[in-house]
Amino acid sequence: MDQMTSVIIGGLIGFAGGIIAGLLPVFLQNRRERRGLACSLAGEISAIVESLEKRQYEQSLEQLIQKINTTNDPGHYTVRLEQNYFVVYEANAAKIGLLPQHAAQEVARFYTFAKSLFEDATDKNFDPKKPEDAIRRLNEMLFFLRLLIQIGKSVEIELKAV
Figure 1 (tube, rainbow, N blue to C red):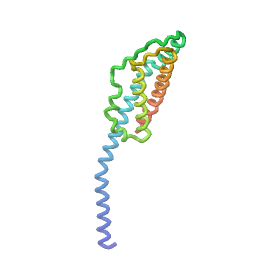
Figure 2 (tube, rainbow, N blue to C red):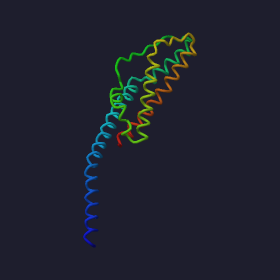
Figure 3 (tube, one colour):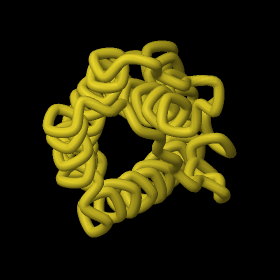
Figure 4 (cartoon, rainbow, N blue to C red):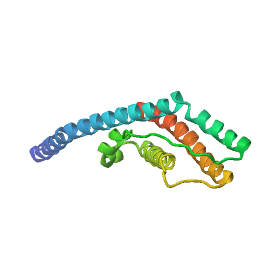
């Protein structure tokens, strides 16, 4: 091998080594950030799902629907939501793209459905005059509650694997 070839090969190895040395810290930082984000979101999602289950909202909605069916009275119900349960998500929404594609999609679905459910549950303007209106709304809420729990459990597992 002549001297010129050795210089070229040495230069290429040095150049590639410089690029790798420059990219490695960025790669490791992104990996740490992705894992931290995934763990934080998994914790928040888990807490939301566990709260929904512990407070037995699904059973409460089913009982309320049954009561309306029995009494034929749409009644009036209130839900108290005073806290922001989406602090981690809202603080990191711009970073969701760091997650694997499917996990990012499911996180977005979870929080969109959660916000929709919370919005319906706290809608002070909804005052049904007919039992079927109340039952329709409560069945929609029950559907989203079940979907939310299902997505939450699934995405929590996926996020823990990141």
